[in-house]
Length: 167
Image (cartoon, rainbow, N blue to C red; front, side, top):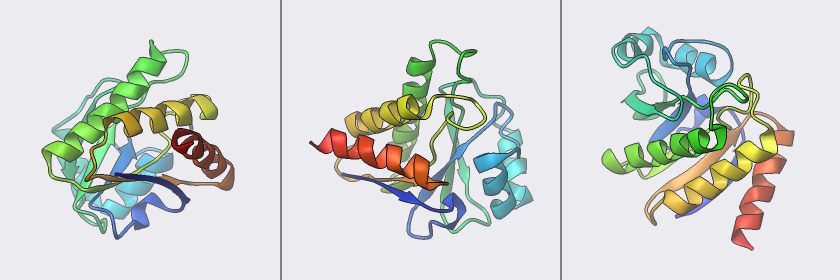
């Protein structure tokens, strides 16, 4: 088992078998991570997602990755902070479902964004704590988890959570 955080583009993680899309309920292109993943994967991804939508906060589904350098995309819908309650349980369930899909599909390496911490308004420190704790409790020794984060501030928060978990 390994958990790491790095700054980067989630669509350019060639060494990972799967990446996670911080999806909307309809699993369609949008802003942020969802827009980037759909642009990089191509229109086949939206066609595959159409059959699986809608999903509820906390749920995750899986598709092929199409134009991405990975084999799989796991689409997870995090809670909208202050709207979807209980937000902390829904966010943890989101990460548990991601890890479950990894196990079910034999995925040994996965890249995760900071789900719900952007447009969905989840406070970053709380989102990072829930993400790192849930993943560390749920992964088995054969899954490599990489939080792939867009900016230095988000990276610093996740690195601190990982350091705290390891101390």
